[in-house]
Length: 136
Picture 1 (cartoon, rainbow, N blue to C red):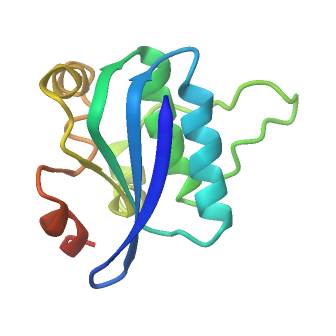
Picture 2 (tube, one colour; picture 1 turned 120 degrees about the horizontal axis):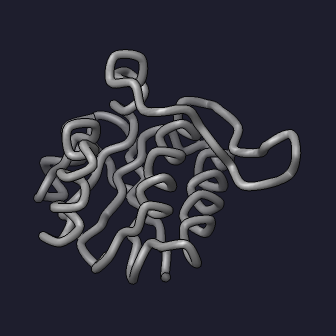
């Protein structure tokens, strides 16, 4: 898994987090930690570029939801020092939160997984970088 960041200027400053590889049990914590670092460094609007992600496991799906929670200002550090965990997704409660984290260009296999588990309706998904940046 490779993770890189860039900034795009639109109505607001948007941080683009490009993920390359597979998001699975061996890499999902990297996604969470890098997103937390970006948030701690002042990023508030995040666009996750999935165009180079070929596979997302259940752990990878959890990491995407965790990133939304990070950008809502919720800590990912558990009291027991274990894995981060959050409650189930609530479209009404998390609606305003998810306005700050959007997805860009998931590959068809990844988009299908997002659709099957219901996250395609949770995330705003764009296929064009400029349109995505202007949507914030």
